[in-house]
Length: 127
Figure (tube, rainbow, N blue to C red):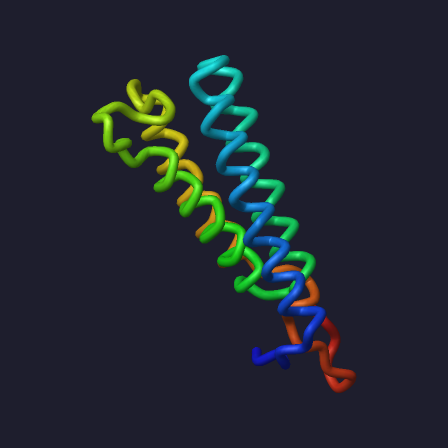
């Protein structure tokens, strides 16, 4: 399904990109702070971002914009600094679960189909 690129749609994509970067930064901080609960909170925030992007734009491109922002924040925060240390701690299994869980949630939200995704014809009843 092809949609036109209107200025409002482009602004929504850029907003989702920024929201993804902010969610990724907040998630990175929360995962190490309160390990089991923080990980669940960060993954729920990602799920809300991805599903909201899917619903707002009606296609998987909304999920992609949020996922790109989230992943860029993840990469920037996990890169070592010139001094040899990290900006934030990336030790422990929580960060790997956060990365894998975020990818799984992004794929899941991008591939779901809602009731508005199907074509309904007047000639036959909807199933």
